[in-house]
Image 1 (cartoon, helix red, strand yellow):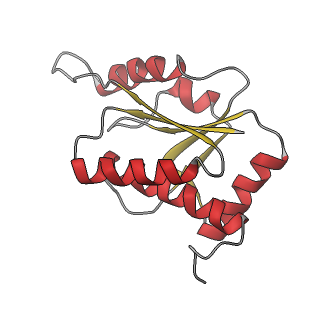
Image 2 (spheres, one colour):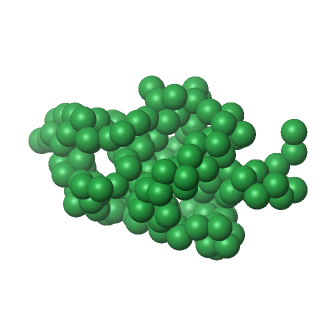
Length: 157
């Protein structure tokens, strides 16, 4: 199974970038993992929020295959504990999904097209985080999930 994290915009903060790279490398021990940073659009005063979301959605859709299982990281998605999330990842493996694609949207959320195309939505927290932090939190939780699946000592209960 390949896991892909699609994000809009680049991670510009050096320390966050380094931590994301660290967990990405650790993930390679368990699964085929890719992080794709899609260049973000600059919002001018001439474009509405809905037009921006639509354009971003079209850009994101170029990276999604018809056979992908798509999960939007969305504030209105289902919340999981780390244990429950690891169970979810294990179910993805057992269901033999070739690619599971997690998507971090833009500042204003996702387009209607992406919402209609996704298989589910997951919330990392009820709190609001910067998009750069969400990337780090997600790759850390994904790494944690694999250590839980493999009964390793990273996660403490």
